[in-house]
Image (tube, rainbow, N blue to C red):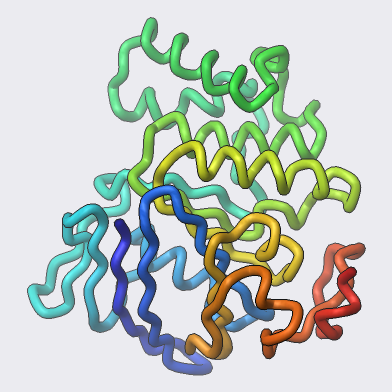
Length: 247
């Protein structure tokens, strides 16, 4: 269980959010560019530090403003899939996925088993020796997800993980990603400014605007109740269009 109540003064506005995510639940954090979505992920991961508040994961305090306590990023056991995937281009798919396990001093034999199993589960076991620069966008996305999942994180964070994919690939990957996140039985947060992503992947949706939660609800409520305005899901740069235009 992830329980968050935190604030941070940013250059253009003050971020102030309260978030709760249960095991196996996927929270879609929706908002336009510059609304503070990625900042929330970075605060949870420990890459940034809140000014005030508390972050608790499975009863373990990761940050407490009152106690001046902040657990370092490497000790939080959080999987993070970055928008550009942040894969090592000189490494193979196997080496990229194994990277986090090696840093944890896991034995070579166990790494072989864990990485091979994870790649098979994500349908890319046949690409184990391929350089990531030779993979398609969808395949790179799966490698990045495998790297985040193989460490068995207590929390999974995904920052715009589908942005780099073409429309046809997105349609397929959305469902697969949803299935993998639920199967992990970990709390997950996916940042997006695609209403379709939020509807198809999330169990709960929060809309963020200038660092504040302006709407919370179920994915199927977005069509009618959402104050979000959004573009159709057929370009990589997202601007404001109506919700109905996305269909």
